Structures are given as structure tokens and as C-alpha cells.
Image (cartoon, rainbow, N blue to C red; front, top):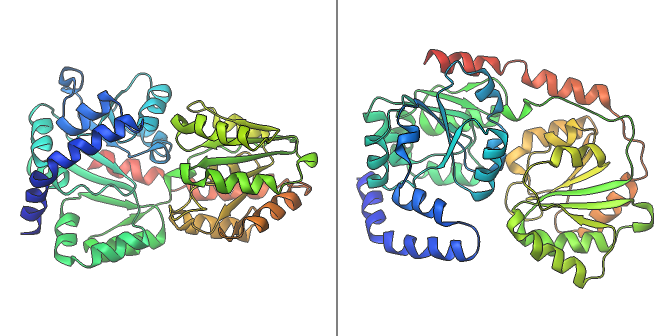
Length: 386
């Protein structure tokens, strides 16, 4: 009954979704390619018809997690699918030999069109992707649904717990489930009533590369649009005479001009706004301190492992629950610090203090990353056998 209601609501609200999609094009959150592929399942099926493995990720964070899978899975007939413009552009840069598409939205007619014109055998869903029509209709066509690096936020857990029968139905559609943390393993098992494996977080598939020395560069990474003013207020309180450069990496680079205009209007100096897809690891290699965005607002934070792997001291606001276990482990090793998101003055003071510290923890960082990625090979071995 719930699935029937879900599909009925899709029909009722489809005209509204069409209009919202056009607004998103105007706001540069979509383009006409993403619009037609997501809304109408309008794909170049001649390109993907003979492929049999689909890997779906929503955004850049999940895209950065799939390298381990792409490199190690025996099946190389892969199509990548995504949901955002930024992840689409970056995927083309990282994987020029693979096809990347925008996955059609979870309208039952969209899924039916896509399924009728492709021959996939497995779909790997990365992170927190739960699409009822996709899961149920692909299962009926004997595709293997595999949830990799599965995550359920506290908010989502409460929401799904209100519909235990639907949760169990969704869980039955998966052939394999791999959680990204022990907490997620417990939560997903409780929701789906299905065996959940934990062999580590794919985000640990990263090789430490720590420079011997760094200049006093502060980086604000993955900064969301509604964090711009907060970050500028933090910068205003910094001791800029002691800082060589400040680099800001917007989460969505199509809004980098908005940020640049704000900086110009405030007459702030020594600030560079990064406006290119990728290339952020070279910035982390140069930076001494990195403040991770998505943590000054109720977004859940961003992955701190990339800057950590380049020897940065990481700061974050307290809205970082999506990476709670990683941040707690890093804090125990004195490799990062979580700050109160509402007290911007304290964040500024902490940056001023840390920029003068001698931060060089090569062994701790290497051990932390390597110890957490040793078991990841179990994931690809089980996927190949599924």
C-alpha cells in the first residue's frame, strides 16, 4: 500500500517536479543534459546497452569513494551514474575511459524505460542511496542490488523507523550490504532486518603523502553556499600578518563568483577562491590547516581524510555527524579538533593558535589510514562472487 501511495504521489507531483527542475537550471544546479536524463530517462542507450555493472553515487564525496571498486573489481564493463553537476564533471575527468550518466529519478516509468533498454546485471549503490522503485523493479528483473559504504544518518534512522514494514521490504531488495561504520552496521541491520557487513570505510582508500614542511596556509574546504558569510566572519578575526595565504574551496564551484564578490566587498586580502573541479589534493599538500565545510550548518560535515593524508591539521564545526566515528578517532590522536559551530570567534582563535604549532605526525597519520583500509579487499571479493 505504501509503495502504491508513493507511486501515486509521483504522478500527482510530476508537473511540480518539472517546474522545480527548470528553476534549478536557472539557478545553475542543473543543466539541460542532467534535466532530460534525470527527469525523462533520455539517455544514449547505444553507449550503455552492453554494459553490465552500474555504480551509482550521488555527489563528489561518494565519487571519491569508488576508486577502490573501479580499480579492483573483475568486471570492467562499468557505467558510472551520478546526481549532481559537480560529480558529473569530476567523474569525466577522473575516469575518461568510463561512461558517466545522470541516473533517472525514481519515477516508476523512468525506471521501466531504463531497464527495458539496458542489460545491467548488478547495481552498486554508494553511501545512502535508497530509491524504492529502482530497488524493487531491478530486483524483479533479477539484477543484484548491492549497497556499498552504506550510511544512515540519525535523522534518516528516525524517519525510516516509523515505517518498519516498508524498511523491511526495502532491505529485502539488497543482495549484499556493506556499512561504512560500526554504528551504521547496527542501524542498517535494525532497519532492514538483514545481515550487514563492515570491512571499513571506502574513504580510507587513500595513500598518505606528507610534505616535510609547509607554509602558513589556511584552507577552507567544501564550503557550502550558506556558509560563505560565516567563513568570511572567521577570516576577519584571523591574524593575517602571520598567515601566508588563505584558500577557499567552494563545495559547488558554480557559485565561486558569488564568494569572490563577497570577499571583494569586504576588502579582504591574501584570499584565493578555488574555482576548478579537482586539484584539491595539491592544495592540501600546501596547506597547514584545513577547516572542513558542511559543518557550520546542519549538513553533516565533510570527509576529513583527504587533508589528513596530506599532513594537515583539520578543524570542523560540530555539525559533522556524517563522519562522527572518523572525527572522534582523529581527535584521540590529536590530528583534528571539532569546534562549536555557533562560536565563530573561537574558531578564529583556534586557527590563530594552530598556525603557530609544529604539526608533524607522519607515523600517526600513516598508521591510522593503513590500519583502516586493510580489510577493504573483502568488499570487492564478495561483490565479484555475488
